[in-house]
Length: 135
Image 1 (cartoon, rainbow, N blue to C red):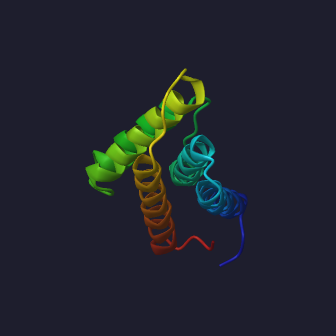
Image 2 (cartoon, one colour):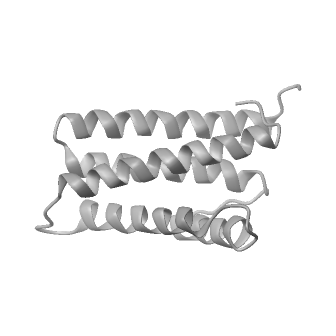
């Protein structure tokens, strides 16, 4: 299959997703918990951007991209609701831990965020590969 601009975009977004996952794990290992939560969310977000690009959708806001995921992929049964819940939770965690004041961060929360991000990114990659996109 020859490469197209969409294929290149999907490859780029998935590279961003996996780089962010690596960063999240590195930050967690060095006890930078807020940073780990941030990068775990962004891993999911970049994979999400790849996914919605397949529908020729985009959004200038994170909430718009998440809404597109719910509408196009969850409500249609392509992805299970638990992925949507994990994505919404990751977005909320990132908001709280990036912008909240005096918010404690728990190792267990970060570990769950990393697991959720890993599952989300891997699930998106599997779906894109099943559609025939070269990554």
